[in-house]
Amino acid sequence: MATNPTSSPLRRDYSMFDAELSGAVLNFSLLRRLLGWMKPYRVTLGISALLILAASTLQVLLPIIISLVVIDHIIRGETETLTPDLGMVDATEWISTTFAVHPLLAACILYSLIYVVFAFAGHAHRMTLIGSVIKGLRDLRQDLFRHLETRPSSFYDRVAVGRVMTRVTNDIEALYELLRGIGSLIGEFVPFFVALTIMLAIDVELTLILLLVLPVMGSVTHFFRRATRQLFRLVRLSISALNQNMHENLSGLQVVQLSDRQQFNLERYTSINEDNRGYELKSARLETLYGAFTDSMAHIALGTILWYGGGEVIQNQMSLGGVILFTRFIDMLFHPIVVLGEQTNILFRAMASGERIFQALDWDEIIHEPARPARLPDRIRGEINFNHLNFGYDEDIQILHDVTFTIEAGEKLAIVGPTGSGKSTMIRLLGRFYDFDDGQIFLDGVDLNQIHSRDLRRRIGVVLQDFHIFSGTIYDNIALGDPQITRTMAQQAAERVNAHGFISVLPAGYDTELSERGQNLSQGQRQLLAFARVLAADPEILVLDEATASIDTETELLIQDALRKLTEGRTSIIIAHRLQTVQEADRVLVLQDGNVAELGTHDELLAHRGLYYTLHSLQFQQQAEEPD
Image (cartoon, rainbow, N blue to C red):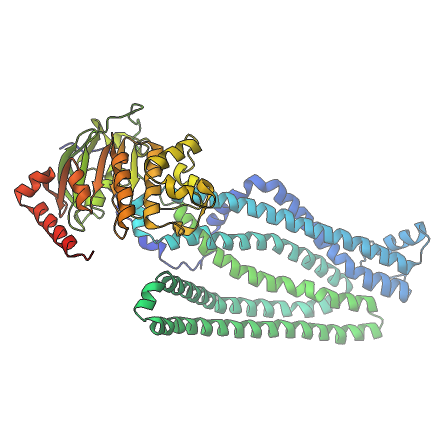
């Protein structure tokens, strides 16, 4: 038996998409890879870094003007001091002399000018940083979306869509917080080192005493962040469970109310909510305790400055402005430690998010395309041949067994069989949504595995039971973004399949916006819209998973008429659920347990009195028993 060139599917570990990653390890290779998306914006990032350096330096100058210039130099008249003022005294005197103003007013002018430049530089830094980060993550999100959109159906058979969506939304947001935080962290440590240098120049002993507090704060911050990291993870998990539970209950609200399940669901939701409350309260207690500790350390440091520095002032060992400058620098000394602890937590959370994102980006499961695809003519005949086809979604479970039959060009074939017999699987393989290498499918004599899936799917129109409505207008849902399908063509297709009637009476006609999943249309109207979509694309092969259940008789007549028009002149494969559709087919294929049980016309199969006869009799009896 000939085999196709595609390789058999590998066993893949899909469970990793359900695993809760902790990001416990600092992964520098992941960081480098993430920064790759920021390279196109490195110029603006460089400008942002220069701006934050300038703003941080100016931030240090402001308390110097208040303490050393105004208090020591102007008010106390101290002209000789060893305390570095970074040129602020000279700048004040220059303004006073040049503009003939009082030194105090000159100091106020200088302070205002520096503050304005500081505020502008800080704002410009934040805008350039945030702008660059947003653009880089926009590119990453687009690349991730593009990659996920090209994963095969086998991937989404095993991975929950919600897990995939989390990577595109929440995980990207975590990276945003990380990159923005790293940029801001630079602005915290520039004032730290400048302030530390000035403090050492003013009084080494007092500075060293204050520095003893830093290891204590650093250690407490480290242990606090370790304690809250796992707690915050539990909070996120409980919120996710709350959202999932609410989504599940609201989505099935009619079933909930019909089965009087409200109290049971409320008890389950309350239990999850109580877990969330407990985690939130624990995290709030820890946050409050940590906040009280950092405030206490700051006040202890302030008391130390007043006690030690006050004695130095009395002994003329330090100026009053120097003591005040120390009190203003306390925040610059301690705040970076607190921020570093916060950013460490964000960093580890972002590590987990980055792992999840790149895990999805690196997932290489694809539909294998031929190296040299066969070229199909502009219009194919539509002959389909299944040749000894075997297939299973899992290696250990076979769905189709040695399926062999031919559909002639232009023939209408109905496929019937019990649930799970492999009807939908055959359709999926015809559209090359899955790789297969045991057996063959030919289209006009060309092996399907030698045709590029994009070219193949343009030749096949599919109408599924669950017709998908996209956000947009009715015209958008007929054309599906194909510029070759004009509004006139869409209207002509709708007229031919009897959809124009209900569309024309809608408020905006073909420009009517459809609600989520097309809920402002009836089941029958959505079915007719699906026919119009396929007819507008004009494929040579039609695959129809007929869905006319729960539709009134008048609408069903319109659908049956549309169906006859739609299948005219096309090779049609219909997974049939209604007797009338089966009877109008040229031939009927009966599947059972993945095997071709019977193949023939409606009358031939009835005369054979096999499985089709049994299925037909059961459905006929069921319809006869249905009330009028």
